[in-house]
Length: 242
Image 1: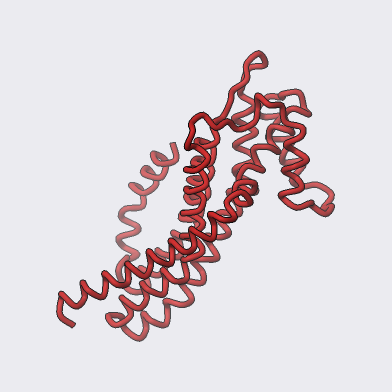
Image 2: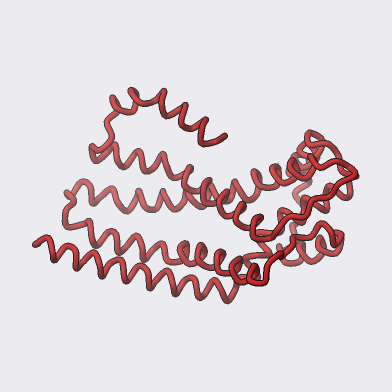
């Protein structure tokens, strides 16, 4: 296929991908309030827990949450029911604040766009596959479907770990650092941005072993190269995590 034909096909693949993302974002925008309740639930639970404990120190707050995590296994109410119960116990000065006129619109838009990208991910993968498949060998084509399925599973597992474990521990720790005579007010756009970056970051990190495995199987990454750059990778990981 001539080079210009490749560019034309790439243009149409990108166009179809963007249309799918926009449709997914529109669907998520309709249900953005439900998604926001899901994202703000860990904060409301953290505030309610610290209020009940009388603002303990960071170590005690994390220890108490870990004890709650290993509870008696009783049935857990829905997120919406939990949020309504928790919100009644949160004082006004600890609720998430909207400090600008357009804050809620942009927060809903941000959540909708990320949700639309997740909903449209099958279409994104399909368009990518249609573009690169003609240039792949038969052995490489057989690897695509298992790799994609494993990548999606790892991404979902990573975001679940971040939402259910890492985020509650982090919120309780940060809230417990406040002095007893001071109260901070968190802006909702900063909080949602922080949560989305955390979820997305954990999802990508959990995908990296699968991506590395695929690149190694098709010969892009060599074991010798990985051994050679391992020390630099460890230093880079520590720098990025800081």
